[in-house]
Length: 182
Image (cartoon, rainbow, N blue to C red):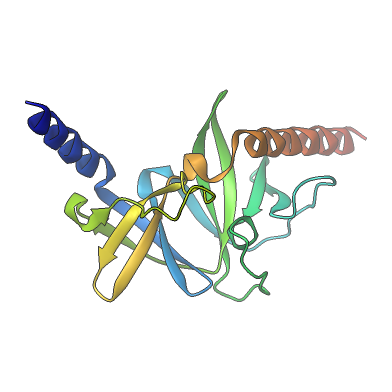
């Protein structure tokens, strides 16, 4: 009976991860985000920096009147910073936070394609030891020619980082509103 219950859980976990993913490049590695989390893809635009935020929080952008925080995933994942190219872009995603949902821009080297990934092609994240947190990795998609790291965008930022991101966008939105009124 316990074996059947475990099998049901494993089948459900595979089905939960199956679906369409937007894939993108970071430092010559392939990553993916569930397509339902993606709102839009935009070219690089000027980012207004926000003082006293972590290095990976590049600042905020004004996207059609809405102030959106922007995170450089290279820096968040402790990769070397790179100059932007014509392929560098911002993926605007909606992520779950304590207060509901938040919109966030993530800077990536290049967007690749949308893939339909089957549950049986996704493996659990291997254990890298206790000192390495990999909660933000949904799984590893085995693809022809390699592996794509599937991200759980809701977990890429820690709770404290999400709070900081929301504070940065709120602070900047009020500054923008004051400047508009003057």
